[in-house]
Image 1: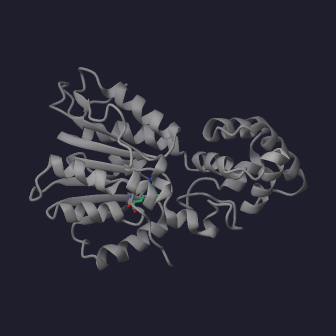
Image 2: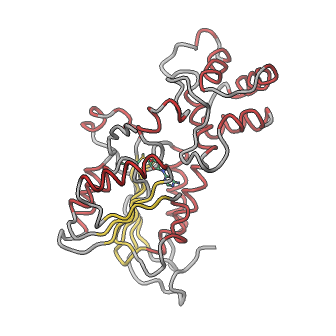
Image 3: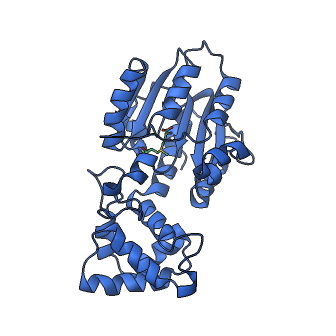
Length: 314
Ligand SMILES: C[S@@+](CC[C@H](N)C(=O)[O-])C[C@H]1O[C@@H](n2cnc3c(N)ncnc32)[C@H](O)[C@@H]1O
């Protein structure tokens, strides 16, 4: 398998935050919830030569590439690669382990996006799958063939903010009567022809938002974020930080609200980023995908006053 490379978004910003907070020779414990091509994990491991890192990925390709990669860069000893959805964070990592830093870099990797057989992109004709873990969940084609017109419209609207959601949902239902959906190109074609003629060749392809919406639905991308925040915050050490990079407003809204919800007297955390940190102009120039990135950080400031070792937010 040729895994390819992935530009690690806001890597410098992440390292700046960590290097300001911890001395290089400290034995810190880190979790990278989204290993991908391992760029952030490697950078953190190198910046903190005595650190131990627990890195998650739910994609079998990322895990098998990651095992070779960690051997090649000599980090096998200090990085434990965990083949799991990060929503299993507290089940997988024993509760005695508390963290100095946890990083989450949301979304799909370049490998997933650029591999036609994974079905994430309409640039290739491939099976309409879109699962980050192809061994779990329901492929996009099944959702598309099974959901009602109203459900489809609502997903395209709420996860894609697609203006022509109604027209596209209607066209999907009509088209699948003739032939069930199985490929990315079938869906691209329906989106394209559902747009008014004069808007079909705009800056954003008519299928872009529908593909984003379906991907979010297939992988429950918003659900896993809410789940993991509630698991990670109680597992931070005092002064431990949770850094989250998101790529669209739906994700960022979830993070912002979840941080605010935790920020009360019974759970003394500090929202480090009142406003999110944005990538530099230089980074956006180097990698246009980073233009929509936002980094938010929360820090645990002292002991939980609760008698419970790991307080749970209701
Ligand atoms: C944007 S890439 C991360 C890139 C990585 N930070 C790097 O520097 O190479 C996201 C990765 O996280 C994984 N991922 C996304 N959601 C996940 C989840 N809920 N559980 C585990 N892995 C997930 C994806 O499979 C993908 O490989």
